[in-house]
Amino acid sequence: MNKVDEFRNYRTKMNQVILEEDNLFFKRFFNLDTKAYEEGALDAKTKEMLGLVSSLVLRCDDCVKYHIEKCHELGVTRTQFFEILSIGNLVGGSIVIPHTRRAIEYWDLL
Image: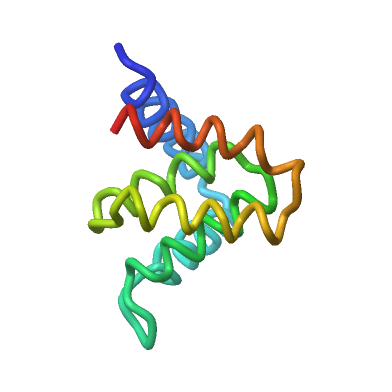
């Protein structure tokens, strides 16, 4: 199994574990997260790009991977991807560089 499949399978499995607990907070939070990225005044692609920048700044590798996948699915080009990374590094500072390395590696796997 490759790294992309490993990430997807783990995420799916653990999200299922969380949701099977029938915890109202997590059900509502997951629903809010899903709804927030749907088409609205901003298109889904723009929202995913914003999510990717935010995830880089917060240094959450799982979130970065998730938003990279969504950006990739929604047609973000490699050139656009590097501009997104540039904004994340500008806002987040040099501490974001290791996450940028892993982000590029994951993009290339896709």
